Image (tube, rainbow, N blue to C red; front, side):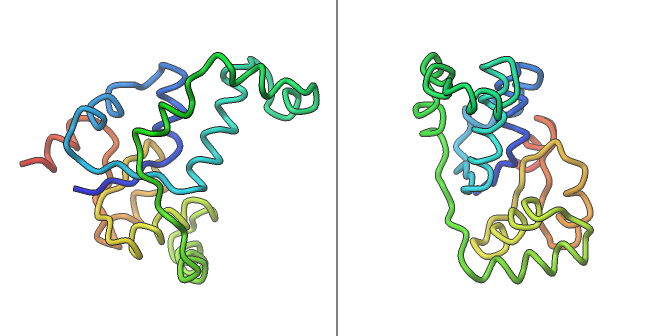
Length: 151
């Protein structure tokens, strides 16, 4: 099964506050995807997590290389396939923003699912609930949800 991750799954994993779901996904036979927006949100937050201060202050102090050097970011990201965001996703995302009161990045994630025929989103963000339900996309927020899908 194809599953698109929201950045919160990766961010909470790095914080070590919620690791069970991503561990289960990585141990599964599912195809796990991110898109460039998920990458951007994740890597931005990762700078803050690793550096212990705001990503902007890390950038302004010229410490991005130093901050990322002790983290095997490339290996971690190699666990995921990267979906492109096609041009057709942009107008669809605007529609989803209006219809489901989603912020742009969340709307683009749902649009990516629809365009790439991905039927599952993994996220801790409750904002996805209505959009996923209405668009026929399964929302996985915990390991039990994943177990239910595998039946």
